[in-house]
Amino acid sequence: MVKIHTVGGFSEVGKNMVVIELEEDAFIFDEGFFLPAIVSMEERDKVMTEKRLKSIKAVPEDSVIKKIKHKVRAQFISHAHLDHVGAIPFLSDKYNAPIYGTPFTIQVLDSLLRDNDIVLRNKIHEIKPNTTFYVKGKNKKYKIDFINITHSTAQCLMIAIHTKKGAILFSGDFKLDDTPVLGLKPNYKRLREIAKEGVQAFIVDSLYSGTERKTPSEKIARALLQEVLLTIQNKNAGMIVTTFSSHIARLKSIVEFGKKLNREVIFLGRSLDKYSTAAKNAGIAPFLKDINISRYRRQVEKTLHKVERKRKDYMIVCTGHQGEPGSILERLSRHDLPFKLNRDDNIIFSSSVIPTEINKEQFAKMENRLKKSKPRIFRDAHVSGHGGREDLRDILQILNPKHILPYHGGPDKTMPMVELSKELGYKFGKQCHLMKDGEILKL
Ligand SMILES: [Zn+2]
Image 1 (spheres, rainbow, N blue to C red):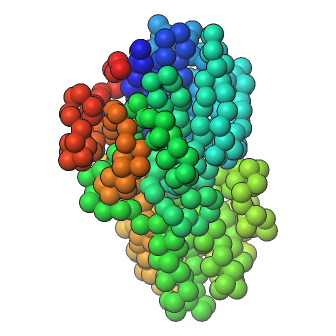
Image 2: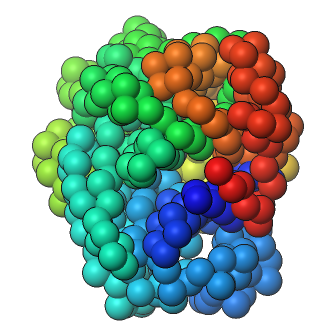
Image 3: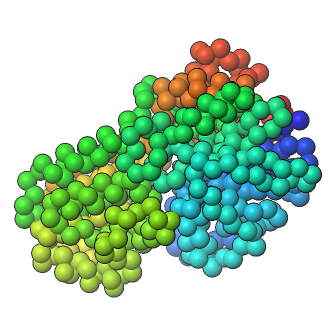
């Protein structure tokens, strides 16, 4: 019998974690943060422990799988976003099982471990996208597929585990992007081969299943950026671009346009340093080779002193697209850095505000302060990394799974996926399952 434990990510957006139990063996897919809880943590609480994180419900409540803890043979990470990898440093050690992820994801995990002074006992394996490999169970081996998929960070995966009854496929986060700016296209060939063998269950990112569209390719975000960066009047003006630090493809576009403008591109902020370094170490970001990155307060101040005087020669790429307290743009808005914004300066948001109360509030505060200096502000040079309803329809038609488990949100997010599956002939409750955190589906 197959048991799918929906540990986290089925009642909220975040703290994703799924466990597949196959008789005497079990496999974990993702251990992520619930980011609103992390963002709300006070500075003094920043020493994180499992107990503390669980008390504020910032990590999956994995005590629900306590009874099968000894059966866990592997922990797979689908991609490098914190709502998928963030809890690994605090939860994974209790399982006597190695951790598997792509080189970029593992580089990010390494930096999270260093940030928290944590050394895991678990073995950590870097596996390239589009690799098939085997993991040892108690008495047999399991075939695993790391299938390349497109999303909004680098080297993202759909992960398949093959069973006698067919494959069980964990989607990670994805959209179907045939023209990604960095990395490979979705591996449709492998997905079709797996569909041929039969997909027993598909645990699928349904965050935007309620949006009736196909999510545009990253090439569209690149075009939006190009429009702003290369066509506005910016001759003697300052240029400040902010985006998600983990969005390596987006950073590539920004760097390339900066060079076209004959400006020196500089990166400012801790998380930009963290993800750029991970990308460099994973060997996927040659475009970052000669980029000057300032991480620490003094470095940032020194760099900005230089830029302030010759702003037309530089493009600043910095943190702060969500108005996070302490990020570079937020500090610029508070005049806490040696760079005075003026009405010729351009601030470009290659991002959208994550629709949680805390993010909306923080962003609005920063924006109001920024506007006092009257800079030009360009919002939303961005496309999402999550597939809409029509990406989901396509993937269901490619895979033709027997059972569907929508995830990456509570019923407000996943119910439209149920409606779509009904439209495609799935029976609700029998073949399409709306789960909550901490439940088990037996197949
Ligand atoms: Zn993601």
